[in-house]
Structure formats: structure tokens, C-alpha cells
Image (cartoon, rainbow, N blue to C red; front, top):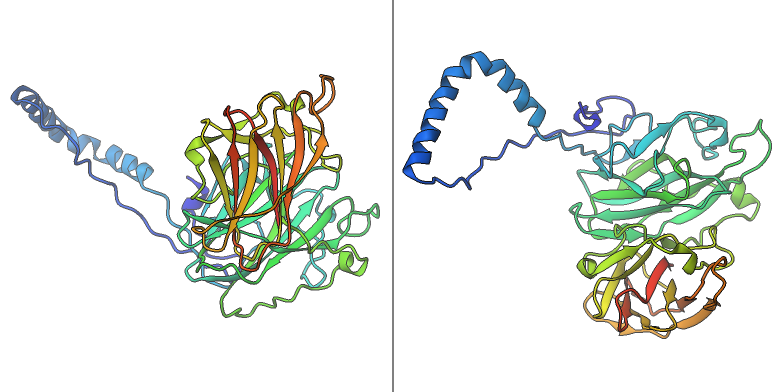
Length: 408
């Protein structure tokens, strides 16, 4: 039985799981065929009728197995401590996610939490990008997420919301480091960085929230607690509590949205996704900036046609800047341009500063061989910008490519 077939009726008091079943659809596309095939079908149907009584129990079991899974929906406010995965509306794959209940002292909770450490967290079981989705019976007013990152590993937790569960809008939450990694094994949070993500406005009458985990290793990052409230903020204190990181000047509330382009999940539906694809070959040719966690870029977005192609991002808050890591072949340089919009319909080109951080060279053992690698940055954008459009153009489809996008 699938874990989403079990509705959560206890655990966290604020969670209410509503279940519904969809009836089996009837096939209306059958071809009546000619007389001979109709007669054969009737004979076969008569035979089936004779066997109905003998097979009744077996048919009932098969019908039960084919029934659609219930729709898990929650009332607001809502909390999930990840003692189970049964509260999820959906996930990218059941095999790709799990719960980590080990080494709990390494995972600190907020200063005002009931417990000092986090006893159970969701993480990935493979290095692939994975996501979880919650559905609510009313409009989301805001959320808080406790996340845990190992400082030696590159990883990300990104957030998106949706009104229908089909079209997603990226959210840039405030990110606060409430417990820095340290070597005191007797104090909560040692060796791990513990962050709180908070957003008090999601917009668009969103009723779904999606949390995406990605990174170099499956065990980092992890998510330990999710709190979601309605538009009236019922019974939820939305002020960010002061944590260890803030006291030490380590707050990182300038966090931006980041996409490593290992999938198209973060792209808006107005993107030319049918004309875009991923290049995961020849990674040594695609250098990353010196301060990046990895020296090369394992996955980049490129075109599947010689025509101009757009990748579009939509953010729930006003956007002030964007940075794109782009890769171009000197023999076919092409172009990477950026335009912005407040409504997704009227676009304005913006000035882009290009900074080449790795020139093309012939050393096949060094990152960036044969390709030019640069950052394309647009800052101080006008008020009201909610959409970023990155346009790839050139005479061949495999260049240029983009490997990382940051929006703030």
C-alpha cells in the first residue's frame, strides 16, 4: 500500500488530511469493428459472465489495487515534523526520499522550539533533485521551514507555490542562520549549519507549496520542520526569532533564489521548454567561478534548435537583480540576453554586465578548456519586476549554454 493511501489522523494537531477517491474511467474509444469481431466479442463476454461468480473475489481485489490514491489536503495553520511522510500531497518519487533519524545532536532546532534538536528530517536517497508538495484547503499566507546543510557540501532548498498545483511561482524566503556549524559535540548543531526560511507573502492565492532538495550528496541538505499559515496568520508568530547565527553577525537574510539547472522544475510555464534541453557531457569544458563549491558545471541548459529560445522565471516578490553563469564556444559565440517584466507579457531589455572568469584555453586538464565562461549580471532593476527572461541565441544549438541562475 502506498504511504499516501494512509491518511494522517493524529500526530500534529494542526494537520488535517482530507481523502477523496476518483472512480475508474470507462473506455469510450473502442472500435465496434465488423460483424465477425462483434460476434466473437459477444461469445467472449458470455464466457466471462459464466466465470463471474468464481472470480468475484479476485476481481474485487484487482479493483482495489487500481483505485487512485487519496488526495491529501490540510487545513491551515499546519505543521509537519517529518516523523512520517504521510502528510505529503505528492513527491517527485517515493524511492528518492527518506527520513533521517540518526545523529540528532547535529541538527539544531530554533531557540524557542520545544526540543533543542531535530529528531527526524527528510532527505534524498539519491543525488538526483527531489521535491515534496503540500496541498491546503485555503490560501497560504506564509511559511517557515527549518533546514540543515553540511558546510562541506553544496546543496540547496528552493521553494515554489501554486494556485492549482500545475503552474508554479518561485519564492525567495528570508534565510536566517540560527545555528552555525561548530566542534562542540555536547551542543546542538555541531558540524552542520542550521537555517530558518521564512516568507510572509506567497501571492497568487496559492494553495500548494513545493520544496525542492538538490545538491552534490544525498544526505545534505535536509528539511526538519515545516510550518504553514493562512492569510489571517492564525495562531502563528511570524517574527523571526533571534538565533545563534544572528547574534554572531552570521545572518544570511540576503539569500537569493538559485537554480542549478539540473531540471526544469523552476522554470515558468511560458518558457520554451519544448525547445530546451540539458547538456551533461564534457563537464571539464564548463568552468564555474572560483568561489563556487565545484570547479565545473555538470548540467547546463541549451537549445534544441538554432532559433532564439527563452527560459523564464517568475518570482512572488519584486526582483532587484539576476546573475547567470553562461558558457560560449569562441567559434560560435552566440548571445545571452536578459529582459524583465512585471506581468509576463510586456518585456524590457536590461543592461547586462559580462565578467569573463575563465578564458578559453587548450589545457585539457583545467576547467573551461576550449570554452569561454562568464557571469552575466543585471542589478538595480525597476520596482515591480516579477519575471526574468533569459534568451539564448546563436547559429548552432549547442552554444551558448547557461549553468547557474541566481535571482534576488
